[in-house]
Picture (cartoon, rainbow, N blue to C red):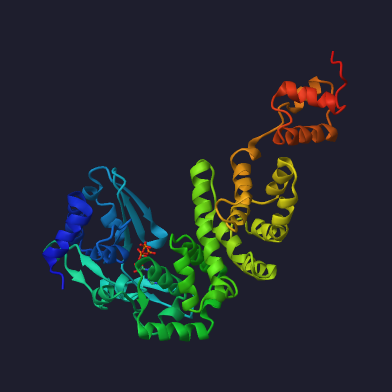
Length: 433
Ligand code: ATP
């Protein structure tokens, strides 16, 4: 058992004096207002595990607004943003530190997989609505009991044993997103499901409970999963938890899929290093890699239901990809290869590169395209071509395209060589006025 001074010491060691002091101020004001405040959820779990917590959540027994907006709390210069619809508030300090306040609540699920009905509650009911015991602990911030750990569901013991345990038998049915949250925690902390929870997972899956989730809620959780840096481990766990059908049919050759996933990480890193100003939607790379070897209709069926940004481009890439390696091998000039690469979206291109070893000529060609070739344009623009006597219209566009290809193929490099080339091609008369 941690004693109260020990928790206080941990708060100080991990988060520093300034934060400790802020929490003491909040606890003091909360007590005066009669709205006790607690640290809750992931940050308490992280504190006990000695991990840095990215953000701190506070649960308040009472009015969030009165506390978050109380003048002493705003010193020095903290900014408060209220979200009245959700009964929550965010306090931002000048040093970038952020605290999220939420009113303690009781949740009731009128039907499986629906959103809960919510009403105000105390800290115990607030902890009882949570997903896993390790996330259902609180630290009291009240001055007389500051630093006391509230652990009514045995979270600490589970944390020590590396166990994920739900709080009641209906947990996965109430909110099936907890299944995917659990998978994420299992991967991040290398935890396993406690035996009873594993049985409850099997029962929930037998009822096909995840099919009741809306596409948006399911996709949000899957996206978090795809963002894990340990994606190969996440996919292995996905298989062990019999969740493959969510994402795709179970792969026949898991090893080769994992090789492509690891290569995908390298490709994404390469892209971030070499094209730092461009945005990339990583999830589209992962979906393309994951769906490359399954029937197109399986991908289409999922994208019909999940709101994936740019989903239609993923489907288009999946149609193009089977023919790409052959066509690229046959491309006899850089311009021909460039035209082929341009047919793919950026995630599609990186997903194709991930199918080859890092040093393969195909990868080199893809990288070359990304770094240099796609930015090359015709040395002469439309205005300059008109000044040389070409009339505006579709033919001008064709000439621009041919000039760009000639530049890609190294036949021209500047305006003068481009002009000579146009003469050589009979596009311009040899004597120019
Ligand atoms: P992370 O480090 O990923 O932020 P977290 O546990 O803080 O982990 P959040 O999604 O920020 O994750 O959730 C904060 C807390 O809210 C959780 O620790 C948990 O107690 C509770 N919670 C979040 N989602 C659910 C859910 N679907 N069902 C029950 N409780 C939940």
